[in-house]
Image (tube, rainbow, N blue to C red; front, side, top):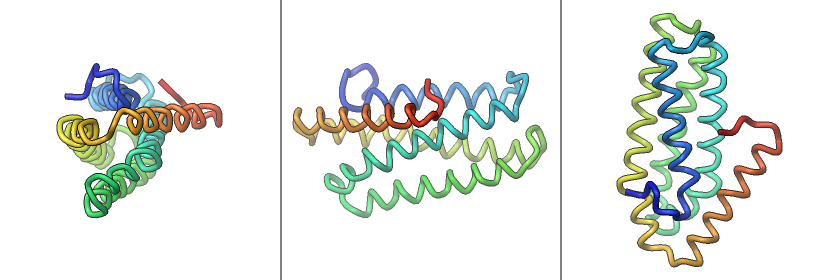
Length: 153
């Protein structure tokens, strides 16, 4: 697994786990203000997806081909559609909970596949200089998001 490797994907792995915790709190009704918690979760999820699309997907396309990169883009689209639907629903309603659970399922499957397969393959294939470039790209992109006022961890 990639976690704790000190490699180029630390930012992504940290965000995966932070988002997983936020999903768990939201679904368990542990959040006193579900609408606010939902907004924060969706903002962080969109930020993470933007980082992956901007920084990770070009490397995936180069290393694993356009088909694999397209599959990642399709996963992102499915998650975005669910996020858009969530924003139209009343937090706590049956429809809302169904969408949150569906989004959580997609999210967990996405990050588990990334951490167990994709990121280790990229770590193996990319040389140290390329890994350093990718790490720097991720750091700069996340810092740019934060500078524009998006929530961070």
